[in-house]
Amino acid sequence: MTTSNQSEDVQSGIHIRDLNAGFGDNQVLKNISLDIPPQSVTAVIGPSGCGKSTMVRCLNRMHELVGSAWVNGSVKLGEDDIYGSNVDPVLLRRTVGMVFQKPNPFPHLSIRDNVLSGLKLTGRLVASKADEIVERALVDAALWDEVKDRLDDAGRGLSGGQQQRLCIARSLAVSPDVLLMDEPCSALDPIATAKIEDLIRQLKERYAIVIVTHNMQQAARASDMTAFLLMGELVEFTSTSRLFTQPDDQRTEDYITGKFG
Image 1 (spheres, rainbow, N blue to C red):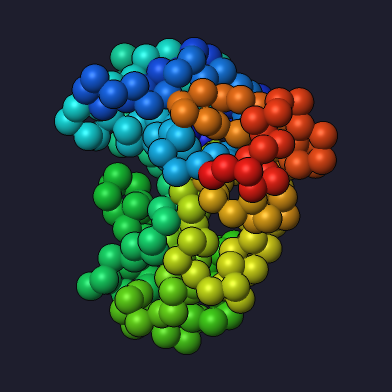
Image 2 (cartoon, rainbow, N blue to C red):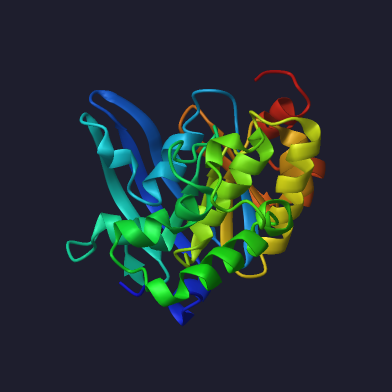
């Protein structure tokens, strides 16, 4: 599998076919098929327990880290099957980065070391380029101006919104092709949320971004495409503007108008 940023393969996006996943006897995802385009933001919406987070965690093989988890079907990054026998899941997770619901910087590491932690973990850090990597990642995460004079301070000393942008910088430092975000703003105040949404819009020029959100207004503001999941099934996947104004399925309209959820 290629891991170079913005390769021709990755430019063709993520292709999901007949994806099933669950835990033990509990099937969470049922025959999900969709194509996630490159250089765009795809939102995944749906009520709690519909499989949003499970689907996203299948895209970088984090789902399988749970002992009872299982998955079948096909997920391709460009032309490469991420579940192929030749794929190292650790290296895959560098190519397909993940930002979680709750900001999770390493509490005992400095801001600088948080940014570099992924490169150190995979043994790919070139010491002479460390300062350049830190600055670039923090600039890309719209955090550099706020922390450039305190890079040796602990990451846990930042505000919640800053911590989340630090986690984004940590993901960007390893030069991913795809960035997955699982409810990245749910623990943030409106001002911090607006900064993250602005950042998402900027980053889509270089990455395919998939964002799980319970906030339909956020999906409408920040995404180009939206997938609506219900009880583990993909009900509808289309442009965000169409899904929110002219949904094809009555269940989609009922959800976005608040009749259930």
